[in-house]
Length: 342
Length: 213
Image (tube, rainbow over all chains, first blue to last red; front, top):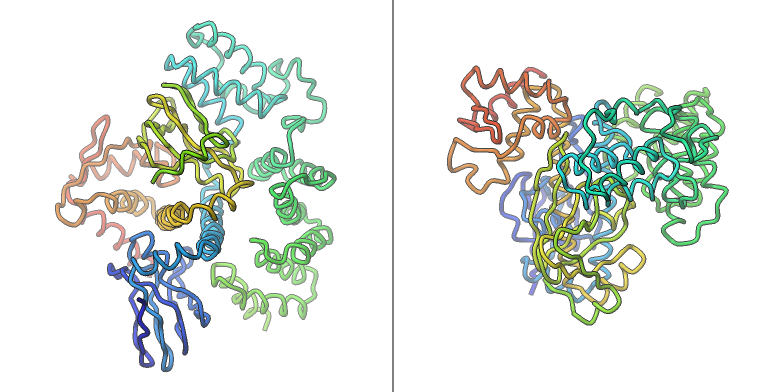
């Protein structure tokens, strides 16, 4: 049975990097602050635990050191679960696990986004190139079945792609058991040419945008993200706009449509189309209020307002961002900008 | 953990030995439970294929597809005849509700993934390339049960793989590794790198931090 434990003001429930992760807590009464360090800026991040909220879960479930310090402010009562008790408790309450999974997923997505942003220089090329590279690597190593599989997947996902003719040719060779041809032009030599006869037979007549021709919303979305990643903002914007003309046919596609508004806003910002960007972010915030990019959208709206000289609105939006959870690098940036405006 | 066999009729999929289940960089939204058999997870690094893991009965893979449709980060190949159950986001909720143990297992997997991803980000955010390389060794060492007990650790990685952990080109990583080799901190072999004293790597990371202050 979990026990209720009283803490005096200033007590530490656990320290960051503590190895003892055998307990999970729920705030019953009082105040607990989680203090951690932002990975990017090194700044201290303070976050209040809400009454009724679990904390210390992730490090306990994952059996890692504590990722933050939990400090008590004022007289406080915590419900303390030993790990077996916690496991028993949540197993009877799948909805709670699902809720935690969603929170964890969101966090993981945010970290992955940060990783991608950090890696923007020297990151992997677009996935179509990489898939083709994997196929050819299998082929060179004599793994014919694997090569055929990967060539097929390339043709399935990128039917009008820049390497489609190459993929068809090599697939045929692999199917016949022929080794990767000596002296065959390297994949890199094809990259970016676009006009060679590698596109023959697939009727590329729209500036390469037919790479996902016939593909669903998610294919288009992914392609647009790749274009954005390569700095081809106008092309990405065209693709996002195209997605928004389509009717989502599943909950997954609806989710992607929501994200499309946000990503479209980012393209427009890059293209200095401030009014359009503002409209896209506003649409996202209003219609996808529990979406994962709401905070970032509000932040972008603040930046746009500031750029357009509307200081009051910028200030109020930065203030809003500064109070939105979780406290992360966007919070820090909003606070900095707020200070500068004050 | 194994899922009830009754699910096999609806969600079952069998792979023959050597068959690809999914390929690196292929878009995908299914994730799999191994009911029986072994699955090899490999990654293409440059022109070589590196085995990252061998998964077996009761393991889960491809679970990142629960988050969003994104290209696979590795290739999964059936080692022997593999019986799997495969799910996607559309049937995820109902599956979890009927299998709380599975939901809890996923909670564990995601907790670990978050920690690992944050740790990786920490390496990438090091400003100095020497600190990046040193911190990448520390990150990998933290997974080694012998870390903290012995000073000399062997890493079965190439410079190219090390470079990918650091988000740097192989040439840049090679420069740092060569420097460390000259200083006697590392020994470099074709298939492994030996760190003679892992505490050296801690010192490199800490000294770069001090320089920033």
